[in-house]
Length: 365
Image 1 (cartoon, rainbow, N blue to C red):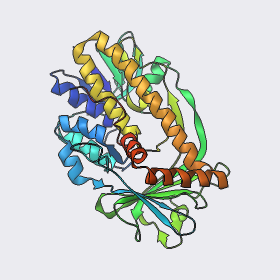
Image 2 (cartoon, helix red, strand yellow):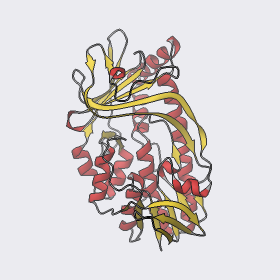
Image 3 (cartoon, rainbow, N blue to C red):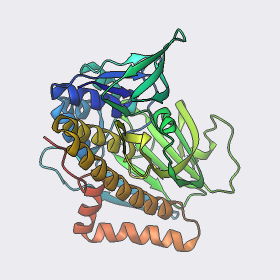
Image 4 (cartoon, one colour):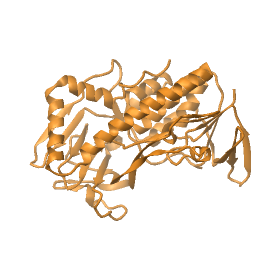
């Protein structure tokens, strides 16, 4: 069986390793000349750790990652409500924090070997047109062509597949830097600040600042840390800064003949809950198992993973609306929701299971 994977981010790398584990060879190409160097996605869920466990990588990921003990909600009056994460998995933490660049480095170290500087520029009668760094275009035939090439997927565009959904009006700012004064093992949320603000502890003493600007807010200058500043709290010495708008989109189907879409090429959503990279890696593991079993299993994979992503899109949309809503009603809802989780452990446990990705199917053996 010949398999061509286009895109060597977390989804493509996981797929290549999972196929190799099942005795299936593949070719993995990526248009970038160098591996990812930026932190980008941070959360690694328990469900994804199960996948990494089967690839022999869960232990090094957990050892290198920052563990989270729970959440801290900082109210406008200075009061802090804390919610500890209950244990929801017999072996693994609900979620750990590790920069995407390090997750990819561990996948590469396990043997995933992409051809770099190779870009998909089209599809033609069961083949991918691949442009190499010297400008030469190769016609690469394969029994299966799998687009794991992200939100701006060249494979999806070549298929002409629609990416239905919508963009959110808010702008998202991210910055990684140093920070003092917050408990280093909790996700800290400031929902009553002038704009929605959160801080996530990272390995090595760094913190990720997250700002959601209201639609009418003026965009800050590139690299500005002013939006990440509160009385007594200041993010400083930044090592990365990014600003972008988020969207909620999904293709209608993951299979188009012998071409498949997985990861962000098939679905994108709000980063609320840290689901994106995890969903793609789980797509990849399940797809490898399906390819090993045959055509009917691939069809079943496409239907199941589409349904899972649809549920994630709905859930992350609800959370995004809750955390970005302005005014007294939205503030009361956020306070009430957090209070309910703290008062009723069963509901808190259910929320943490969702955060850990455990509401979705167990990875195939």
